[in-house]
Image 1: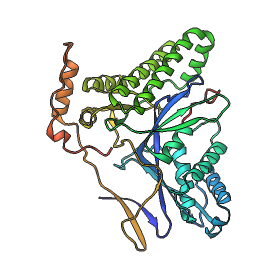
Image 2 (image 1 turned 90 degrees about the vertical axis):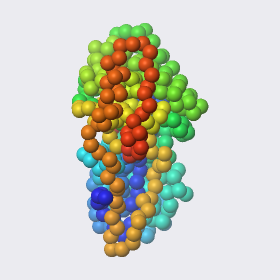
Image 3 (image 1 turned 180 degrees about the horizontal axis):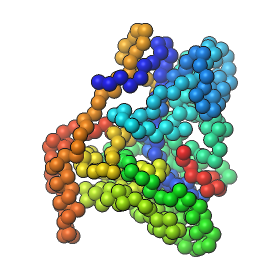
Length: 385
């Protein structure tokens, strides 16, 4: 067991899941559909007396939350929200630290401390978090990430010109398993969105065709998820990822990462896919079985580094502490760690080395599969932080 953080007695600690784009990750102006997944990496927040806000975003959240609560906020002592470390379950060295999750956790912490339960006031909490985020994060839309932090699971965002985005919660198929991994380097040049803009102006017909394909793949992916068809959704996500790579090559800003290419080959050999995400140094692999997800994670070799993060099906919530006293410690089990399984690597390498056209996946190693890891804007700003 490992001590993660210490909470103050009587002050609720709130968790809000962070999120990652599965499709629609670069927020191109013409794209109308994105799908966001909530992750088991959380922003944590707690209202504390006699402290100052750690950031303009948190200050804006607290000010708006108190104003919204009106008389109910009178019971709150002067203070602000403090943030805990945003880490995946293994607690090791990586945090998304997304502004949407921070805004949601901070707003919910104020409501909870004022005696207004998250469960009964979700819509109001979302309004507060949205307003504060919009006021402080210029040029960064966060409709999908905020909805994912509020509800958990999968969120479809339909962007509409001159209108608010339409948000729809999608039921996660039982057979959808995610592996988020670091690639060790940025996947695209820093100016690649500017290159996309220039390409669109110089070659509008070619650009329109690529965008049409992206829209079709993203819409199909969302439809497959709605139908509960994980296998079809994975295939649609792969086609969407291929369109992104095609676009990057067309605009002379090709994907630069050999590790991601290796991850794509590895995932395909196991029966899944790997693709880019809304974070330029991260990839995501998607599989239809937990065994395949475990096999992929175990077979990754440096610089590929799988994170102990999975799909989070529950949204923002109050942390229930296991004990009462002067202070209470939140403990997180340490997941299994260590080098990749030799047998897993052997299986994967046999796939990658096999040049035959027909391949059959061997039965998974029982040791490997015994226990899963914890795992509309018209500007060219990306819709993520």
